[in-house]
Amino acid sequence: MIYAENVFVCIVAPLIVSIFFTKGSARRFCIFLTLGIFMCLLAAYINSYLLVVTGYSVKQAAICVTPISEELMKLLPLVFYFLVFEPDDDGVIMAAVAIGVGFATFENCCYMLDAGAADFTTIMIRGFAVGIMHTLCTLAVALIIVLFGKYHRLMPVIFIGVLAASVTCHAIYNMLVSVAGPPQYIGYGLPMATLIIVLLYIQRRKLRGSR
Image 1 (tube, one colour):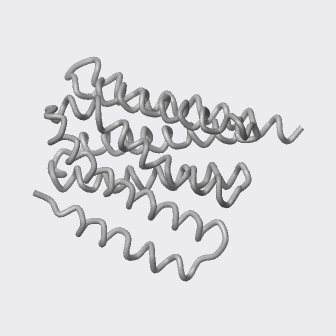
Image 2: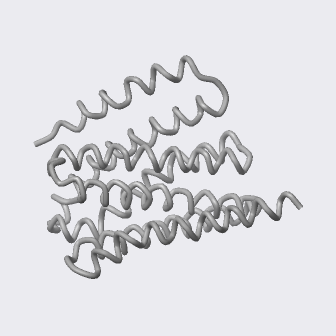
């Protein structure tokens, strides 16, 4: 048994201190990183509750329940920031990356405490795969918001659409890694392949903007 609240305090305490000594984008990144960690803790409570209510096994819940709750928790602070503070495109992307990284960091720490850290290979694979997956799902949401944010009347539909897309990607990843053998390897490799595509897209977008 792990005490997620204790882990939360240990990770968040120095981040909160750093907020008072940083400015500008560095401070915003620390704030959203902390929010991502908090949202992961909140999602853990919700997942535990839904696991009891639905009667699903842990494997079933990982495919059918946790992608919805976790992606929704990551989306909420991003949407609030976008609607209330109206940041520029880089600000939205920065917030999404920080939330995704914070969420993945806390989830990996809890997993390591629960399953142990003796197998370095497993920890490395999970660390990069989960870290990339959570960050990319949130980043994909941010990119869609940036692309279609000017269509204010369509924003409710856009938010529902990006949530559905991120939930689907998350569920596919969980489904693949839950099956031993080739599907698991494909699942671990999927976030990395997606990362390459996203980086190429961002680079192409920067090149267009510089012309």
